[in-house]
View 1 (cartoon, rainbow, N blue to C red):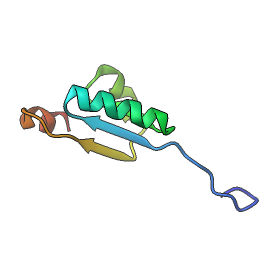
View 2 (view 1 turned 120 degrees about the vertical axis):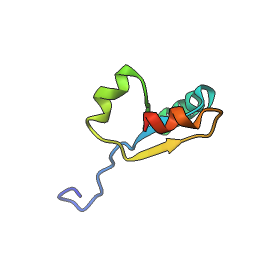
View 3 (view 1 turned 180 degrees about the vertical axis):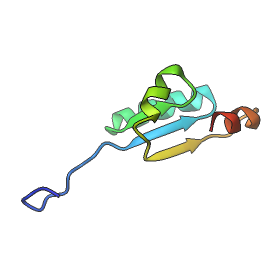
Length: 71
């Protein structure tokens, strides 16, 4: 809250694991809504993960073992 009683808006950080096409679509949708999307499992995401996430979304796909090891 600000000193005038207004709520501060914080960007929501969403981690995404799963099918590449679905993650790509989700990243675009999040960006258009002013939210931060993070593709989990990339070298770039490791640095970002140290700052924490608000939500983790795991989508379905043919290789559940890979998703589990990524998490």
